[in-house]
Length: 254
Length: 276
Image 1 (spheres, rainbow over the protein chains, first blue to last red):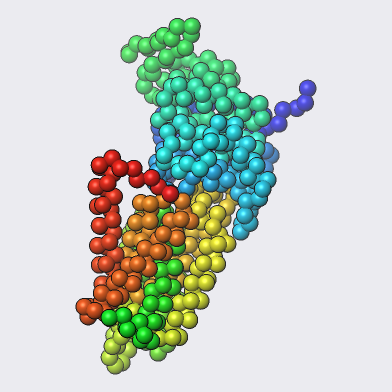
Image 2 (spheres, helix red, strand yellow; image 1 turned 180 degrees about the vertical axis):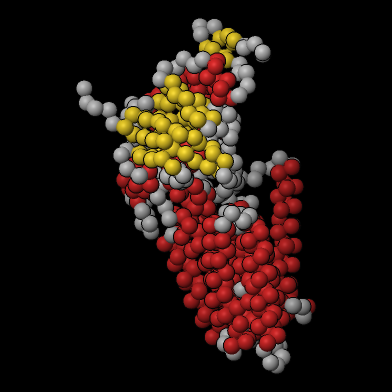
């Protein structure tokens, strides 16, 4: 069996915000075709962690590599879907132009997008079933369609790593299922890291879960205990499990 | 009634208005879309320092404003990015600093600075041929950079963080955009003056946005609206003997309000307002 490539590696990473640590001693290894969900409360450092993997933030201490290199050198291999429920809905840009943005790393400064870039953008839109909406202004689309457009932009350059920040926010459960289905498809080609504060949505689809609230607790399998969740959220958490019949277990307040 | 177009000063005024409309229509589209109206106002007012410096050194105040405008654009861009100070605070400070320096330079300049008012509020009826040439050159520069950096400007305006992730030198591109705003302000000095320039950077573009969701069409429409405002204001100011810069702005505001109200009325009656 061929050796699995380490797509992301974080070693003893610390990050601070205004003097207080937001990430403490994070160690994380993500391999090819992993599908990792990172859950934790708002302000727990999820976005900071993504920014460190993207090379937008430098950790105070520790070492980060993406595909064996400094994150900034690997950016052409990273697809990113920002949280962005707050972008300007009136901005004069359509789905096609947004998707092309994802190919910048291959086109470069001053140059126009090539015919090959356009083909890749078309394929990406096809994969997320958005090709027919390519001339639509972004604000005219539903929340789910907007997310699909941003996912198309992220995968257009055939990345080895796909990072998604709260992708299921403001998307209804049916569309969430469709989006997870898409991600499962992409998993055959790339490692996926998804960050969310919504425990239940994540737990159904992803292969591995890590809980993040300044410190990272990593769980290989999907099972996740109440103690771990409570440690992460610092409060009793309602676990909603999807079995054959959806049911929920309420932990007693003590 | 139309023999006024035979006058040389009127021809220069029309040409200056048209050339200025090209610059402010295109750059105004970015100012409105990227929501950098306040920083643009800051650059415009700060460039007053350059006008004062021009008087003080005995060089062309427009040349002084060009240098000062570019400098304050870069200063604002860098301080808002690289310090932890809130953006509006930085803009407010540099805005006033530029104006204060301008006032100091003028007070140090002996003699009466008669044309000062026209730099502040514009005087399109007194554009010399030499300045038409300067406006034309600046137009070519602005247009050239926008053509060259079209996809970068679009990306940075829409989503700067993502642009950085794709490896785009976003800070340099943003600073370039601010410098183009500074040059546009220089182009507009004769037309509406540095105090009123912000109106022609925002009104035509935001009116254009009511009709289209395509950035290139928005630019074209915004150039057209700006030219309409300028010509309307110019003729009104000539016939009614009012200050030209201010008349252009008031004409723009009135047209903007009328069009917006009519569109609102039409859409409330259920008539389709399909965008291009």
